[in-house]
Length: 581
Image (cartoon, rainbow, N blue to C red; front, side):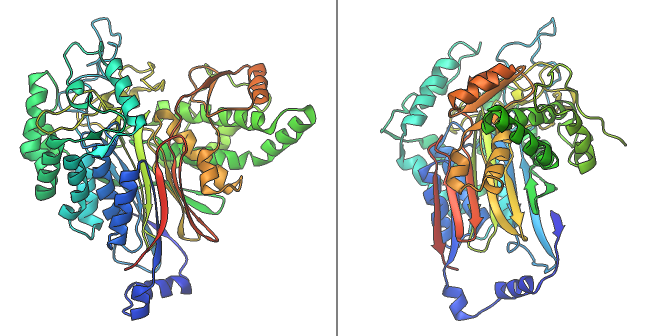
């Protein structure tokens, strides 16, 4: 737990009294809750749980297990992720503090993992070995993560929260065109990439648009987890099924790996920006540090950016061209720092406070260019003195908020389904630096700080974020998207605060992305105006239209009330509704 000091006010005192009030009229007054979810099934279940009296964590638990059924390319039992939590009413309330929390349930490297396990005899990376098949998986953290969150903050019973997922696994759900298309693509993509035959087709070839898809083995697994808790997954029948299949195909995960796994409560990254408190993910995520760096550097350069916009207008350049180039300049510096400094803080000393300090960032912006491109080859980390994931956002009727991002890494993970248990395994080992200086599947280069080691958590870009204003939730935001997660969350926050957009406008707006390498390449989605593309190409950029750049789920508090928005790039559903105590 990280306690954020705030000023004692009469309003806070009244609020603390109201939490324990037995006034009958207060008890029946409806409150407002909001959810922004990646599919309609999780949205329905999250809303139901909140309307039944559950809190934000209850809704997160129920919807996460539903997504393991209805969103199998990313929702999961066999993966891991991060949860950022603002919970003023889910703990003993102290009038002079508000509590923010962060739960790291990221996967860990198995005990048998070695630094060079994906290299051949010539120390070259073996293609796809860290992405496909039985040696691509880290020890899963999802079940333990939601179990520990529920044990600390849940109010409804664990068994009750898993019932919707069990029902959907047994009775089936109607397959969307998007899931069917991704499953078909993945089946073809993995066909020739594993020397050991994979069983993905046996389980998921029947994902056809409009058809009802049932998962009886997964229903049995979910029932065991509902009855026995996390113990089943890490020490019980499910653990034995997982390890049996790993041993059969030279996988690395053992019963000892599973029994030793624990999620970790960490201090979130907390940064001040424009009178707001930005709360986000610490290492092993790079997201929180990067987002705070981007926001603060943008603020420090605000006057110079305004000058550049004015000069550009006189020269006939579009505002969007100048801002896109400016974002690229900032992002180069952030990704250089990411590659050098960031990894699992249980294994290396990550200088979080220095990396997000105003003084450090003031040195980073000195070389930002407004009229030309900084050289990627010379972009070094600053000197410090002594794509498949899914996200959901939830706010309950008392203002507690959950921002949760979890993943299998690639769509459908490693292509391995645990036989007899019915769930997919992750391929998160690719998020380590398989070889320092060599890019992973998302094109992100890593360094020795993120080298493979037993029980180490791999670096991530997942960035579940909560923005507080006047000591209350203003935004709950996050997205999938691999390395574009960081820049998507950053631009969404800026769209709201500086561009004055509504929640829906903020998540639907065009986004741009630059990550140091490939050199001078700006990715965009959905489209940029023709003139903007021409101007960026004249500056020296190459442009790439990404088919997919995130699926932002945003909840926003405005003067007129809550707004919830799901990105039009995905198939998400968002709702604002009344709940009663």
